[in-house]
Every structure is written in structure tokens, then in C-alpha cells.
Image 1: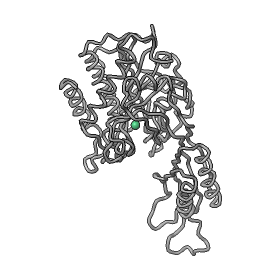
Image 2: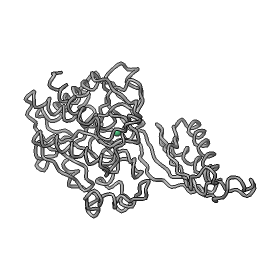
Image 3: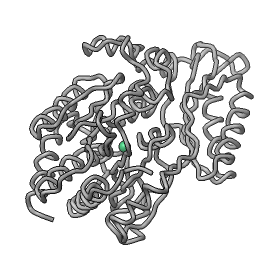
Image 4: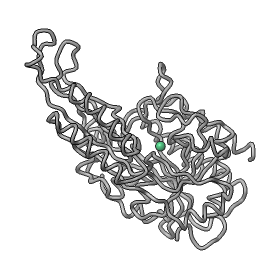
Length: 408
Ligand SMILES: [Zn+2]
């Protein structure tokens, strides 16, 4: 590891540190199509310009910075996302983007002459924190999310994605599948902070990803009737909150039975007054597990439990088990023979691209507490630099050696 690369990493990290950081919580609030998002995208564009890379936008506004011309031969792409969950950590997403630029710098410093184009991507709206669907950027360009559905999604203030795009100076009409952009991607390798404790036990700073668990999001809408909290008799109450509360416990029980995890981490209670009986309660269920059938059985039980309270259940997204490309994994293992293999319960743009048929792999960087989607999310600097080193080795293997191709 040269100190040059440490400097490249530190400089980028410092530039990003204050963007979207909440003064009280210390967490990041970097949501799609906001001022913070704009600043992050400007930063990405600046990094591309500084390095003489060609910056392109696709039909969903994902940013691609290319070294070499991917229209002559498909390239290898690395990178991740810059948006965050509410009060998210600094590493989820940005670590992959910063490491990509640092690895490119390292590649250039070592005089590697790429035999195929190298791209760095910043996927838009990966967390789905504002409009509710994760990986919207990659889902739209691969056709996994229809543009009319994406544009109709609304944020907490009732603003649609179409309106938010217009407010950001973008044209909603342009949103849609983008096979031309995807044709340029011969393979995709995403570096990401680990969102669990797998690497702690394995005593290694980086791992290679094997698969992503099946996972999905469901919206549960419970009906009720607003009334006075003091004067309405028990018998006359239709309290939407009771159904939601009962279903949250049912979700925990069902997930435990089937060896999955289930979380209801977001609710919307109407009218939301302390002294008013809730007239409507909405909860969003996130369910994941190693086995697809077990996840489906969990959701079926939650749906039945919600149905007992007259709720409607709507599937907002579903992603089946994603297995990363075996030929690419073989090449990644050649570059990183000591790296252990890990599956993950977290969704990523890499999973969406893999499902769309693009050879895809992932590199995970050790997280000393396993905590993620929290201001406490962390990775040691030495491990981050080990991640850059690992990514550099992978890029060298895939674009720098003159081997026939990045993919199968
Ligand atoms: Zn992420």
C-alpha cells in the first residue's frame, strides 16, 4: 500500500464527511433528489473530471465515469451508491465509490495499461429511503421497475418522484430501461462495507460475496375510525393501531418459526394525535432469509394475521435469491486467494445487475461491530485501505492483464 493511495482515500473521505450529516444524530440523511444528493453527485462528477474520465448519465440518472470507451468493448465497472438510509452510517455506499476512485488511482500509479475500459458508477436512490423502493436506480435501467410505477412513488410529503425529478431540473419523460448503458457493462464488482459480523469471526479484512438472500418489502394498511380517545367506549372503537401492533408481533413469531428475519421499522399513523383513535395505520414489513420458501411462508403468515384485522397487504418489492457469477468469482478468487467467501442478507445494486444477467461480484470490507444503517456503522482505516488494495488486485486481474475478458 503506497501512502499515495492512503492520501487519495483520506482526501475523498474528508470531502464527503459533512455532506448530509445531521448535527444532532451524527448520522447521514442523503436522500434521492435532494440538495444533499445534488452535492454528492457534484462531488462524483468532480472526481471524474479531475481524473479525465468521461462522465455519462443513464436514463435513471445513475452516474458513470469511464476510463476508456465502453462502446468499443464492454468494460469492467466498479462503484456503489452515495445515498443513505435515515441517519445512516458513513460507509454503506460511499466506501465502494471512494475505494473505486482510490483503486483507479493506484492502478494508474502502478502503470497498468487497461486492456478494456474501466467504469466507476454511482447508483441513484439505492436505499429507497425517500420513495420506498430500494435500488430504484438499477431496477429502472434493467427493467425490474417500470418507469410509470417509479414516477408515481411518493415521499413522506406526498411528493411524487416525477415531481421531485422536475424540481431537480430533470425530465421524468427520460426515465426508463437503458439497454444501451447496460451493454457497456461487461462485468460489475461492488465493494461494500460488511453489514454483519461474518468477517470478525474469520479474522480477515475482506471477503468475496457468493449470494444475496431473497428479500422483499410489503406495505400493510389497517383501517380504523377516528374518534375521541376519552369519550369513545371500548365497544365502539375501531382502532387501526391495534391490528398493526398485533401483526408486528405475529411477524416476529412467523419469522422465528421459519428461520427468517422480519422487521417493521417504518409506520404511518393517521391522524397521529395523542388523544385521537387512529383512523388508519400503515406499517412496512421487510422480510429476508436464506431460503426463499421460508421467506414466502413467513410473509403468508403475516398476511393472514393482518387480514384478521381487515388490512390490505401490498408487495412493494421482491428479490429472489441472487447468486453471483461463478466464472467471475473464480477470477476474483485468483486475485484474492486468501479472501473468505460470504453470503449476505443485505440487498445491493450488484444483486439487481446480477439478476439482469450481468456477471457480477462483491467484495466486503470488515465491520468491527457488524452495525450498519446506523451512525455507529464503522470500518477501520486499515481495513478500508486493505479493501482498496483488494479492489486494485481485482481490477488488475480483470482489466490490466490482457486476459481475454472480464466476464465469461
Ligand atoms: Zn449499500
